[in-house]
Amino acid sequence: MPLLPHDFWSFIRYFKSHEFSSPDDPITCNSMDYRLIIALDNIRYLLHNSIIINSGYRTAKHNHDLGANSDSAHLFGYAVDIKAINDDYRFQLLFLVINLGINRIGIYPGHIHLDVDPDKTPGVMWYGKEKELIN
Image (cartoon, rainbow, N blue to C red):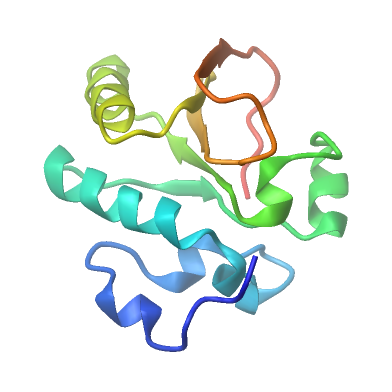
């Protein structure tokens, strides 16, 4: 995936680039999929509530340190984990996510995983019980 244009983040209303960076490499935000970022910005507008990104792009080292899957969509900038504040918030967020076309969704006790990885099966939703992977 090509890096985002240098002025891309100036057009994003509700997020700062650092929210999507791997904690061990601050410029990795520029490797995020632009369609996912734009969709999240639109979801935030429609949600009328904040969205806390627990995890965006991950370097291979950081992903390994978290014990995450070695083929995680986070490694390619195709995924985010969003903090699930409560059940009402989770429902509203999922409603918007599905209606705006994000179709790979993982529901966990403390977060919601969203990804747009083109190399993975679309139209899936799963529930996970493993530990929450924060950034």
